[in-house]
Length: 427
Image 1 (cartoon, rainbow, N blue to C red):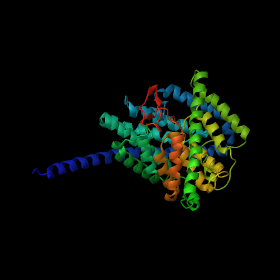
Image 2: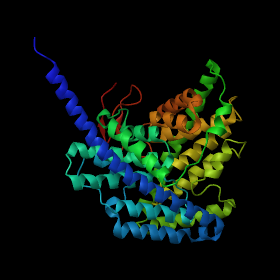
Image 3: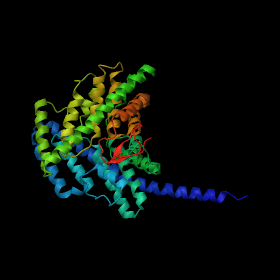
Image 4: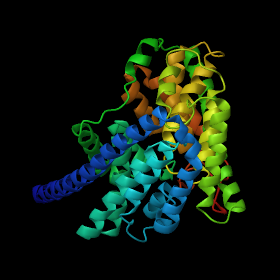
C-alpha cells in the first residue's frame, strides 16, 4: 500500500506557502487601503463641517461641479467609469489601473461634499483600495489570475475600512461583481485585506458612527407574524433600491444625451441641486446625511424624506459628481423604514435598521454582505430580521442595480434574463 504521508505533507506545504504569500499581499493591500481611507474620512469630515459652518458654499455648487468635470475631463478620462471600471477589470483584465485614480476620486469626492452635493463615500474608498492594490500587481509581476484576486481584495479593503465592517467588506468584494455567485478562490485574500484595512484605519485614530445602542433594545421576539412583516418591508426596500438605481441611471443618460461637453454636466447639475436645496430650506438631504440617518432610529421623520434623498442623489451622481451611492442608500433605507413604521407594527428602530441595509442590498445586489453589515453595525439580535429583509429586497430590486458592469451569474428567478443582448440559460 502506497504511503500517503508524502502527498499529505506536500499538500500542506503548498497550503502554507499559499497562506504566507497572501498574508503578505493582504497586509500590503490593507496598509495601503486603510491609510488611504483614514485620510479620506478625515478630509470628508473637514469638508462636511466647513460646508455646514458656511452654508453659502452651496451657492457655489455649480463652480464645484465645473472643477470636478474639468479635473476628470483633462486628467481622468481613463478612470471616470469608477466602480464599473473595477468590475470590468475583474471580468476582463486589460491594463493596470492608473495610480491617479486614487487621488482623483478622493479630490473629486471632497469637492462634491464641500460644495453641497448629495453623495456617499464607499465608491471613493473602493476605487482607492483597488487602484492602490493593483499597483502591487505591477510591481510584483503577479499572474493575471492573481491580479483579479488582488482587485477583489482591494475592493473588500476599501469597503471595510470606510464603514468599519470587515466581515461585510470581505463578502462585498466577493459578491458585488457577479450577481448570484461568489468567487471562493478569493475568499482568504478578501478577508485578510478587509480585516487588516479596518485595523489600519482604526490605528490612525479614525472612527465610525456607532449604531448598536439605537436598535438592539427594539428587536422583538421571533414570530411568524414579525417575520412576515419583515418580508413585506423587504418588498418596499427592494422597490426603493430599484427606484434609486433607475433614477440615477436616467439622470446620467439625460445629461449625456443633452450636454456634449462633459465638464458642463456637473456644472449644470450643480445649478439644479443648489436650487432645490435653497427651495427646501434645509441641508438635511445633501452630503452624507448621517445626522438624519441617526434621527431615523430615534423618532418619526417626514414620510417623504427618502424620496428627497433619492432625488438629490440622482441629480448629483447622475450629473457626474464624484462619491459613492451606499451612504445615500443607507439614508434612503433608514428613512423609508422610518416611514413604514406608520404602516407596519414593528418597532421603528428595527424598521430603520432593516431599511438601512436592505435598500443597499437591493440596489447593489449584495444581500449576504448587507446581512453581515447589519449584524456588525446593529448587533446579532437583528440578524434574522435584517437578513430576511435583505434577501426579499434583493429579489424585488430587479436584475439591474447601481453598478452597470455587474454580470448576471445566476438570474433571481425562473425566467429568461438578458444581459448585454444575450439570453442567459433558464434556471
